[in-house]
Image 1 (tube, rainbow, N blue to C red):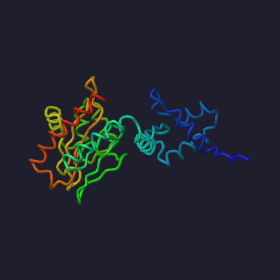
Image 2 (image 1 turned 180 degrees about the vertical axis):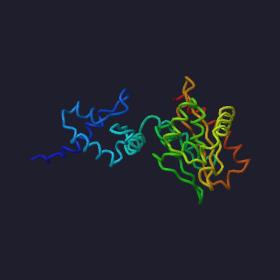
Image 3 (image 1 turned 135 degrees about the vertical axis):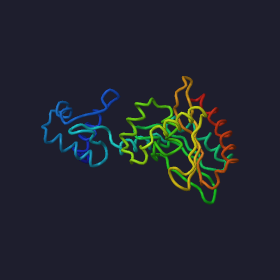
Image 4 (image 1 turned 90 degrees about the horizontal axis):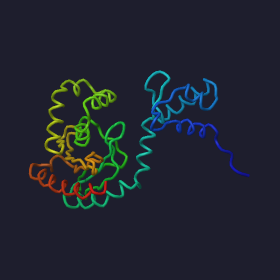
Length: 246
């Protein structure tokens, strides 16, 4: 005799299948109309999915995909073509600079690590695949922000609900992002975590679109001026090898 299936779980996945490229938000009414169920049942299922982190409320009765779905999706991408392409390049760069290296894609909530090569230093900084990085304080995040139109950047920062100290000086942020665009890299010397530094560069496809940020990161004490200059050269060489495959 076959094992009976859990109908509520199946119905939850059916609800999640309502999301698509053309439908980024759903409501109780969407569920009622698609599955011919009553409002109470639809509401209960949506509340359960929200509690699990699969969806999130964006306004009364309206939901978008939640952080847990995004996290699981990014974990599933560990074996995807993009991660497979960049991993060998990251491994080589990690050995050359002696610090950890990662590649990030831009997700809805910020840069998310899709591949990493960890340093063999006795004291080092390690990041796991699937880690979400702050958009407004990291080298990776600021690199992505520098690529955004002002309205998109403002929308993302508003969604993140930044503390007043992070939003007090929009002109200062704009100037920093303009400098990042001009110089072609972003540098973080302890602005996110006091003892961690990073340098990040964009990897672009043939159309010039930024598809990845590639970063060298480690203990701040080791990121002196000489090391940063050396890392910039080797990071740029790695990016040039990755870009034809994007």
